[in-house]
Image 1 (cartoon, rainbow, N blue to C red):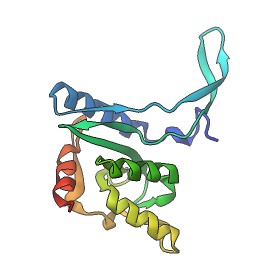
Image 2: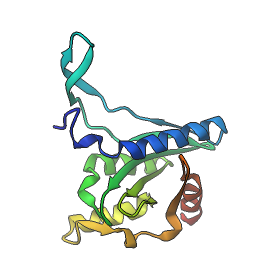
Image 3: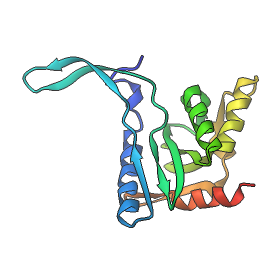
Image 4: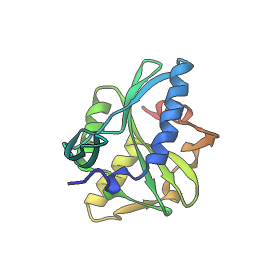
Length: 176
């Protein structure tokens, strides 16, 4: 089980960028998307400062963000990798199952991927995530390359904002 200071907090820079973007979307009444906190169980607390010094994640989280964009329910997870190859194991089965259930209810699920070595961001539609996921479970590659992603879903970072709403629109337009 992951701990408070574990690798589970990687990508916090990406999440901060998304949080700032989501606040801007809220202010402009374009979307209302919130970060879903992962429940933790404190183990040690510094009595002098009342800060948690050791904690365990209490339960598995589903996705990082959930909300609505112009009346359309959305959920997504933010993932970061340091190379051009993304290990599919970084997406957990319970996340894929939650996203599938969310899509089955008429919502839009996706990943926002940040390839930090290339400083590039991508929107990965759930349908493509499932293709990569299923392939990895049936003896095919256990990862995918940045080049495997559709460049039309590259998300532009403009200053402190990561404009992913255009990618959601493109995803919706390409659905049957």
